[in-house]
Picture 1 (tube, rainbow, N blue to C red):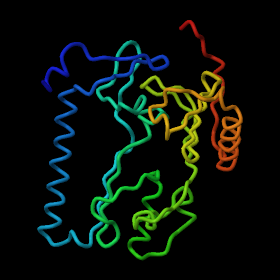
Picture 2 (spheres, rainbow, N blue to C red; picture 1 turned 180 degrees about the horizontal axis):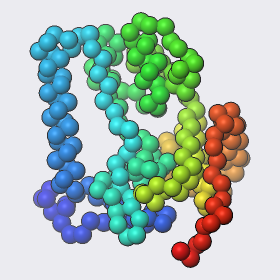
Picture 3 (cartoon, rainbow, N blue to C red; picture 1 turned 90 degrees about the vertical axis):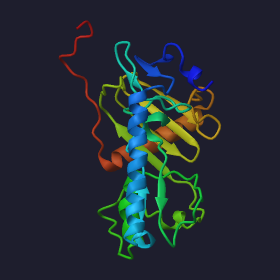
Picture 4 (cartoon, rainbow, N blue to C red; picture 1 turned 90 degrees about the horizontal axis):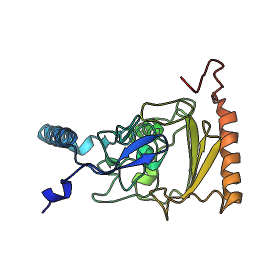
Length: 245
């Protein structure tokens, strides 16, 4: 019965100018994931064997979602449903990944946090866990997760992404901001933006920009202010670009 779920042609859907995979039925990718799983088990087993597991922090995470979209009618090897798109995109399929942190004496086994974090948080977090002084000038974009790891409510935070490049996944230049449950994506290539409520719509299927222009304007202003603060490089028109080529 389970095998029949993978019968037939792999389903896809258009994603802007690319094609997005809608089913995780890639045996090569499955074998690679299984190999990673086995390797993590081997590593944790060795830590226990050496009696280092009680004073070693283990962090498992991914740098981005799986590659699910490609150009010219092709699609990627991975699928990130129910999240939208994947690697190279600022939709949740590209930027939301599971993260597991085991910090003996700090984290409680089986505990879960629904507050977002970002990879820049790991540097100050490791300093904090090691009892070392933080270095704010070196990790200005991140914050220590120690309080969050202890199960405390750390409140909402604003996260930003700036990716003004083209990507083989068919992504076009853009940026995004997440503020609480709200997320705005601005597409420079198309000169438009999209607004989503991730609590109600984690798959980013319903663009609320026209229904809630006030929230969209608020997030656009916050995103623009952040870009100016960090002196973000913005895309510029290519004078040699010819659409017909």
